[in-house]
Length: 310
Image (cartoon, rainbow, N blue to C red; front, side):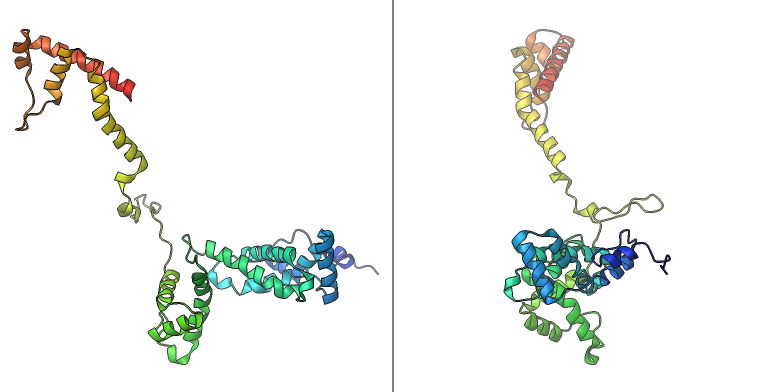
């Protein structure tokens, strides 16, 4: 009798063990599905690897990838302690697996599982380093080695009965042991431990529930004088104060120019200003009101010249 209660996709999987059930829905379903995929014998692995290498057979490459998906799941579990989503770790590991399949040479005499481990870990490591903190904590090869070994070695010290009193920080002796075993300077161990112990701090925190602006480092780190817009405005003001004023004065006749210079630009040694309206009126033989009118007309003309200069 035919069983009509089988789950959707079961018949497809029985007919083709390489078919991953579509619409898996969640991570547990995916892990269950890849664990049901068949593993390759050494002969099958060699056959598929040669087909892909010599004939670019993508179906053969797909079987090499599918048969090792469970390996990626196993490796990714070792990195769950970094607080990143398991699904993302698996996804990055799968990228490393595909890179390994692309570069795998069946003539080297090694199994794909051994070759792929390096690529899977490399992709997961890169993902962790990019996403564990907003600011990258490890850039050099030595720092990467420290990052991925410091946690496990520190945990080993904590599990030691003689180190129970040092759960929050490393002792000098432990730092020396780490530096010696990892072949790095003890200062580098101390720096990496400080980086890993620290956290991300928002430069500009969001307002609180009461609507008040939260105080953050941006309040005392920002240098308004070096802000690009402020720098450009400052340069424009300096240009207007020198070249702009000079160009505007060139638009005036000699009398108007002297009146403006004496009234607005001339400063005596004692800090006092230039001539008054009455002083200029006496000099030119006109009334003080006439000097004011000439000054007003000159200022309007200069204002238009400055607008054109800007």
